[in-house]
Each structure stands twice: as structure tokens, then as C-alpha cells.
Image (tube, rainbow, N blue to C red; front, top):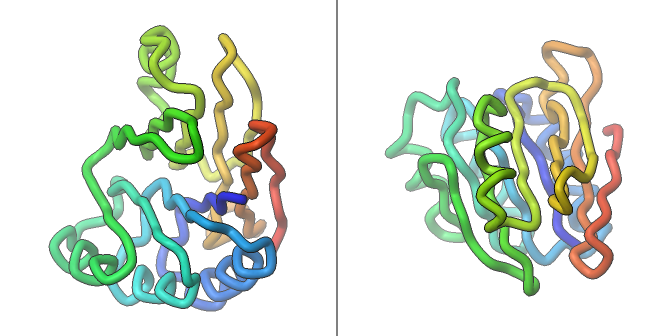
Length: 160
């Protein structure tokens, strides 16, 4: 299982809830699609016990601090981040503005994004598009993450 989150915006209790959900689901990878905001929030993901892949969001100003916070157990990069895992090609970004151009490339099987604070899982052009919503819950009042099953290429939104 793969845990997916975005837009945590320094909400430590929500991040701890997400960590608990991901640990219970035995996630072997967690992907954060941007907007941790501060390094202290990113450090909470150390409790996952699995690797983390993340991208910077538009509210992540302290980039070097975030790199250092994640360094012992994960990596954070400028979006788009492209990598392969579990026999699938992933593209992770924060903003959704270029989704159509990413879809038309035909290179990725899974595109993960955030920024809208609205959970969404759909397939388009044989690509799984997944937005876990906002794990911080500040904007919508709903804290969400997602679980992605790489064996079936299906996702599920989890309300914290």
C-alpha cells in the first residue's frame, strides 16, 4: 500500500493521524504532494517507518530546512517529480495547472497532485489521477489522505 497526502499546512495533530492511518495500512511508501509549510511538520513523517517522496508546494518557503528534515527517511524535490516504484511510473506535482500536458505525454501511469484541497480519484487516458485532498483540514474543515493500492491501481480517500 502507498499512503498519499498533501496540504498538511503544519497541522501536527492531523499529520499524526495520517501517520497512524498509513502505519495501520502497512504503507511501504508515502507520497506528500506539497505544502508541509515548515520543517517541523515534515519531521513528523519519521514515525512512518517507510520512505517518503515529496514535492515542494507553493507554501513551502523553507526549502533547505525541509530537505534536512526529510533527509534521514525521504526526499523532497521541485515538482514535477518523476520516479518508478512498485512497477509503475509516477509523476508528483503540487499544482494542477499542467495536468493535461502531463496526461498527453503518455509517460506516467499515476499522477498525484494537491493544491486544490479537494480529494479526487479518477482515471483519464488510462492514467490514475489522485489528489488526496488536504490533510491539514484548515480550508475545507475536512482532513483527508488517500491509500493507493499499486497492485490494482485503485485509490481510496480516508477521512481523518
